[in-house]
Length: 526
Image 1 (cartoon, rainbow, N blue to C red):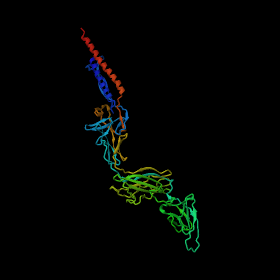
Image 2 (cartoon, helix red, strand yellow):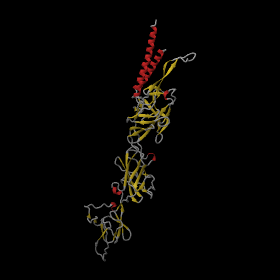
Image 3 (tube, rainbow, N blue to C red):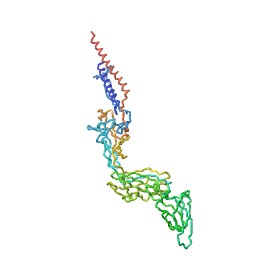
Image 4 (cartoon, one colour):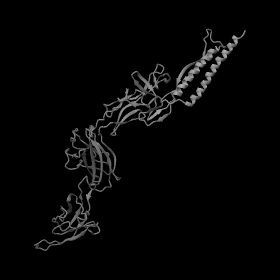
């Protein structure tokens, strides 16, 4: 009987050494789960039951138990490396069916499928019929990256508007020509004695209160004469005469009638008048004619860019004129009011913007530009400008949001996988597109899974059917991208176990040796 004891012990020790050796060999294998040998004693059967003095007949290996404890997670920087933090298995598919793994070393094959050693990673698919495309739970399939060009989208897609959420500075002054002091009175008078048989010119110099300019006028004819700066130095063309925008100057004559005339041209006038400031015409090339500006790039149906600039000109407290320019890649400028190639370099948008005492917009509905056909054969385009989120507060001009729905065509530049398994493709134009969601499987009895090699397991009757869940939901962990789960083998512990198993093996061999010596002694008795 002692031979049986020793032999069973040697077999058990051998099984233990096998498990330890396998653990040590895979101590650097990604996603590997260690195992251990479990034993039980054996008793010989007895027809009359087991006597109190009956010994067992050795030991039996009952199970090589898999240890599904969490391994350490190591970051890698590879977008397609995935680690599971918690319970669960990646679901894989090949020609032989479905298997499960904790090895998250994934690549993309030539067809665009995310795979590991040829097995495709499974996940929830996306329904492209919804806007935006949405993940459909329950629709399981292999996750695939579409490597074709992302089709362009025009900036009027779905009737959407270009949103300009800005703050206009309420402290800005209205844009007007104010080199002359508004309200300054001209009081110099010279009377001609009748009969006047010839022109008689007399002049009076009137200095404006702010000392900027001196204007010469007479009662017979009134003209803008020599201009002087603040220190009395004459200003002429050579010294840089000021530019008169609109080439007009307004003033109030003695009869209370507003008169306009061209600088240096004579106009009949009364003996006295009041100078009034005149608003400056907008010119996108001259920053002095507007207060603020912002710009964005819009797109036609072919993905051709359109450079859209929007200008804001304050005309009174709470009142702003808004202008826009639209320039194509061929250099053509479009009149957004008519849809034709623009003779004027800009278009006034609606009636402008009006703000209430609270700084909130009072007329902020979308302003629709004219529909036009872009150069190059694109579909007709109708841009809309939406300022509904804009404000007018006493802070500097700021662009809080600048959004338009269009984009150019693009190719996939990289992938992003979040902790809940959502897989998104990021394109070279900055757009992202959800392509699916990684699912995790879990089992009622993980010990019942059958190892099939290549870091894979198969379900069995003992494991029960898998339950599929989104990462982070019930009974499954989260996904960490750009990371891998290390083997959960404790190498130091396994080396200690190896020494113990070796001693166990040697002790059982000694049992056989001693029993053999006893038998030899019996054989030698005479």
